[in-house]
Length: 245
Image (cartoon, rainbow, N blue to C red; front, side):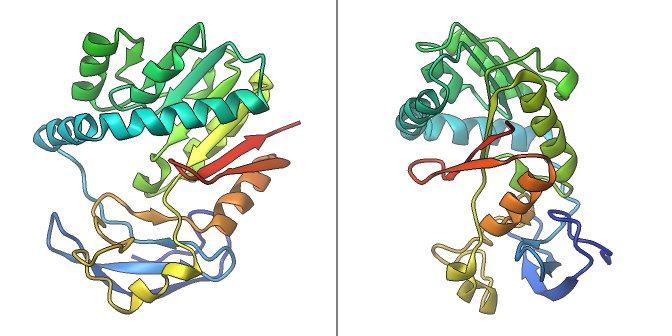
């Protein structure tokens, strides 16, 4: 597979780096690098079956307590930036841990996720409005805050969803929070030995972690989509709050 442009920033300066091993399918797949925005990507073509989606639910439940702590810190920061916010939309909400914590502060919360096991659990346990369907900006309905946490790294083509999220935030005059695991220069040593079983490696699950954003790459994509103010979140889910004033 050859790429004419970066899947993050659209730069034509993309090069093959090396093959990386996948844990689930036990394949060697090519890793690419963008010389412009310093992001990496290794499209795998892998699709989760229903059994794997059920395992994903179990993993979400296992980190629920940790994520509650992350959620509370994030909500506090978001309300600092948008103190009058009343509504919150999350794309890729999983079981709804973040929305459950947010429901104490926001009268209206809603989540979308494509894992029906996760949304069914969140409806039953948290009594949340979680929808098992793909989301588009047409469904945004002017939410004050839109969040997308640990989703974009799973997409072989993340730009279309990012563009929709940015469009929804602009239409709503709200703020957008994006969190992804970053692969910056401090982790380039793992490229020399991309063993998926190595402690701390960003290449631990290359079947589904297929886009490795650099901070530079995410911010460049945000600028291309019209963001003009960026607030970094450094605790819990690391990411950026984007504004489109």
